[in-house]
Amino acid sequence: MSRTAKIRTAAFVIILLILAYFSAGYAFSLYSSGANAHIIDTEGMNVNIDGSDFTPLFRLFGDGINSLFGFLMCGIYAIVMVILSLLLILPLRLIGVRKTTVLSAMEYRISKCILPVVSVLSVIIGLILTRGTYIVPLLIYTAIWSGLALLIYILGISEKVAKNK
Image 1 (tube, rainbow, N blue to C red):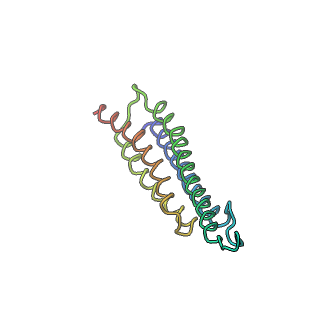
Image 2 (image 1 turned 90 degrees about the horizontal axis):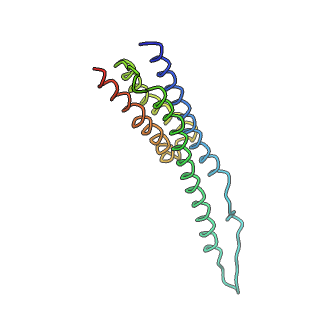
């Protein structure tokens, strides 16, 4: 492998590690905020209107708002992961892999093997941080950046390697 191929591979690994860190970090953020903070406290609520007890209805409403907040946070984090992934992967693809760049098959194989390893590592670290909960958001965040890395970078260099042969 040439010096530029090693630099591209190292940059790709660093970008994947940054995205894995954010993926596990956002899942941990949901875990810690969901366990500790609620917008509407429904525990000590006692609502009586004209002698009728409306406490269960108001608790249901408060718990629904709390769940909606968690769902919105999950969606916002997913949008942030898409933007962050694009901001990190697109420059690598556009600057590192130009029309005149010659790519080796070894660089392609290394990049293709690194992506699932870092993805699995991200899921394992996220599961450890969240103690086995919040699996779906963790998998969504990991699928976002690993899918974009596959579509933008790995498929781009596979086309370049196929042209070089």
